Length: 252
Image (cartoon, rainbow, N blue to C red; front, side):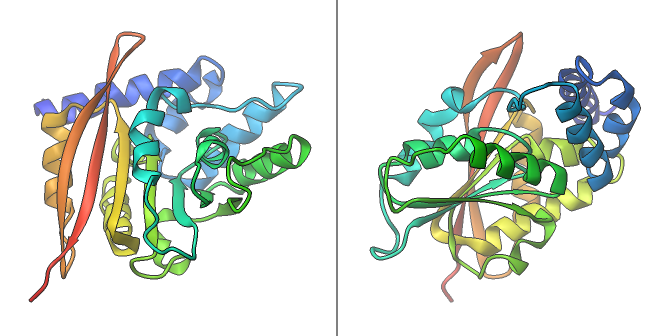
């Protein structure tokens, strides 16, 4: 088996295993259909029905593990009169977006987006029941149902300062029919990010595989992308990485 393909398969099983510990009936569906809306609707519906009180579900790790990668990118405003635009892409029921909203000293508009209306509803109900106080009183937080292959329908070109992707691209790449969607999502991110903005992908995929994929797929007319990687650390025997993609406008 091709080493890159083998890594994707093995990593995909690790991702699924995190869910299967709680949702064994979803095993096959998750392995093959992590790019499908219906899969995640079922996942989050079953997840919420098994617990009497709401609990955030975190892919890989929570905000505390990656805040030192995220918060330094929110230290400077691109436009003095508007909040920094932050997108938590494929948010599920993670607390990542709300934590950015709670901790950012500068005003931020945090949009937590997911393809599953079930996940979006659960988070909306959770923040209504348990109000989150922002660090900056001008900050805003919202949850929206959004297909991230179509970011241009929600955002204008060059309007977003930071996109955070914790496991979303991994889920697409490891799905039966998701690889093309993963490339499209990356291109959409490059379209909506400001030239001063960045995309952060948190993943357990080895840099030899992910860097090559990012450099190959990050091709957009008029835009080049700088791609880098830092090690997040090891958790439960798995090494995680932060891949940063920064768009650069080509001036002719």
